[in-house]
Length: 91
View (cartoon, rainbow, N blue to C red):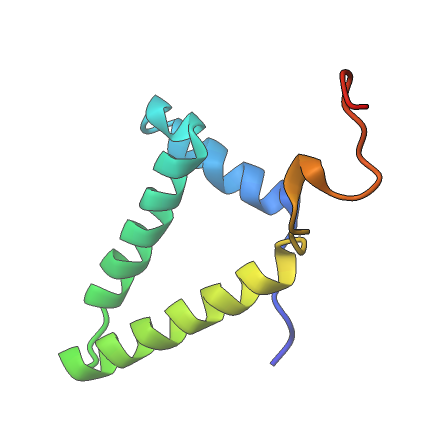
């Protein structure tokens, strides 16, 4: 199977399609809810058993976590107090 072709352009196109139906989807949190609802809706339309559908949904959830981990830059601890950060008023 060929890898998915995920891109910022694809995500923008999908979000714009949803915005055409609901302007609230300009907010990323609303758009993500639509994506999740679409997944549930599409799975519900399949002829698999409920157990198979839920198993597939669990696999999709794990896949989503994997994509999140791959695309989310690592966070550094310490915030503004990290070494090398200077703020006005620091002595």
